[in-house]
Amino acid sequence: MKLDALQLENDEKGLDSFYVSFGDLMVILCVFFVMLLSMSRVDVGSFEQIKSVMTGNTEDTLVELAEVLQAKIEEAPGIPGASVELTKDGVRLDLDTGVLFESGSAVIRGEALDSIAPLLDEIHQTEYFIDVEGHSDDVPLYRIEDGEIETNWSLSGKRASSVILHLRDFGFDALRLRAVGYADTRAIVDITGKSGDELEQARARNRRVSLLIR
Image (cartoon, rainbow, N blue to C red):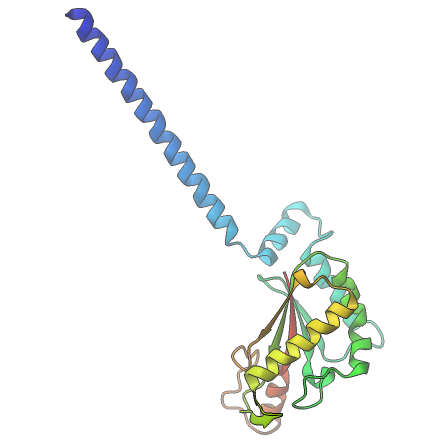
C-alpha cells in the first residue's frame, strides 16, 4: 500500500511538471506568434528606414531608391511635374497629370514618356512591387462618351491603367504592378477655404498619378 501511495505521489508530481512545462511552451509560442503578427504589420518603408539606421547601409533599400530618384529629378534639365517622398508605405513618386495627359484624357502624351524614362529605369532595376494610383481633383466630372459614363473615378482608373501599359512596354513584369483609381478621395492639398489662383494650384497638385514602390 505504501508503495502504491508513493507511486501515485510520484506520478502526480510528474504530471505537475509536465503541465508546468507545457504551460511554459504555450506562453513562448503565444509570444512568438504575437511577434510575428507585429512584424507583419510593419510597413516596408518604415522597416527599411530602421534597417538603414541600424546598419548604416542604405544599399539596395527604398532609402537608396528615394535618394537616386530625387537626384534624377533634380538633374539638369530636370523632370517637370515629378516629386518623390519616402513614406512608411514605401517610395511614392508623384507625376503631374498636366504633364502626362491632356485635360480629361487618359492617353499619355508621347513626350512625357521620354522625360520620365530615367526614373522608370531606376525602378525597373529593383524587385519592388508598384501600385500605380490615379488621382483627380474635386471638380465633378460626368459625361457620356461612346456610350460609356465617364466620372472622376473612371478617369483616374484609366490614367493609372495607361501608365501600367507603359510600364509593361518598358519591361516591367505584370506581377509587380497594380492599378488603382482613387478619384478625389486622397487629396494631398486641402482646398478648404481656398479660392482663385490658390484653389487652382491646390487642384493641380491633387491631379496626379502616383507610383507607390513597396
